[in-house]
Length: 441
Ligand SMILES: [Zn+2]
Image 1 (cartoon, rainbow, N blue to C red):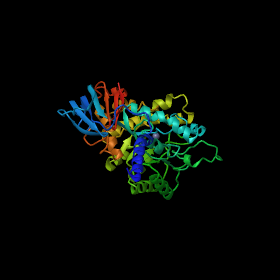
Image 2 (cartoon, rainbow, N blue to C red; image 1 turned 180 degrees about the horizontal axis):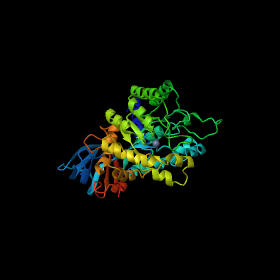
Image 3 (cartoon, helix red, strand yellow; image 1 turned 45 degrees about the vertical axis):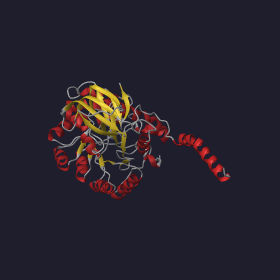
Image 4 (cartoon, rainbow, N blue to C red; image 1 turned 90 degrees about the vertical axis):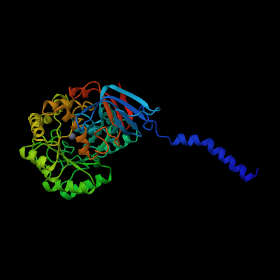
């Protein structure tokens, strides 16, 4: 053997023997890995499958899943020999639920000033369980609509997507676009306290400041824009009946967001702030508490979604740590919001499911379904609000919202018929997200 060839051979042997080491070094960080690998073929036997678009319940369906996607759905599908079988033949199967109004990346609890006792990193770690319990409750996607610590939500979304932590697919706002001392600001501090940038990141006080904030958010990871166009219940010194931002400022927000392909949702309680937002072209109004007849007509005309959190009033009223001024703000709003929810449903306004999770503890989002039915929806309409409608509001109907070939394999199952008893959705027995099983009872 020539010396050159010998050296080459030794290098080859060495590199082959080291290869597993390099492979191991490059392997993904072992996270809380779900039990089913997304790559293999999985066949779900669905005893009853709710087609959320038609409202029909289909029996004895098979859902074939691979690569995290739904490959096929039908009653007479051939199941490949090597497929892993998941037997949900005694259950009702639905698409993964979507909550369009959560705050996963913030501290749960009523007092925003509690954030000032923690660093940004402490807050981020404290928020990790919020994501897990939300997914385990059957919510495979959320639209997270703002954080006090700017970009904590972007970091959480990315950590979930990388498998570092367990949670739903998140679409995030990055920060609150708010007037100074407004509904999305950290208020209640002495006037000589200066907040760090991440706790006042979205403050803007002119159309051009609004545009500047949105340009920054669009480039730093926001999936949509949250603007607050009236005062708030859970903000010190705020009046939910006050109007915040001018129509010109809201229009600037919608126009600038559209420049980046982003949609805008507007927090609004007062009737005038709701109408200002709808006229400017927001995708949804959050809370919509005091929406009047003109506002309902405008929402229908513009195709604006309403995202009304009609169940969390109990949490505000019963939590032991709810500050007294928040209780005052809330006093006459809850009953009005439920009345107006009924009016909006009867008028045929587009409705999405949003709970403001974080006001109530995370993971009990599904309790809102029963309220939606009590106040005027059929069980199917309530489920559609959290599936097809929510997907449409997010602009991701191609990915989520129903069990169809080509969509993400986001599938849940319950023991019983949610069309007969909507509360069954409060106990989800099976959760699959992107083809991976996270819960199977
Ligand atoms: Zn909220």
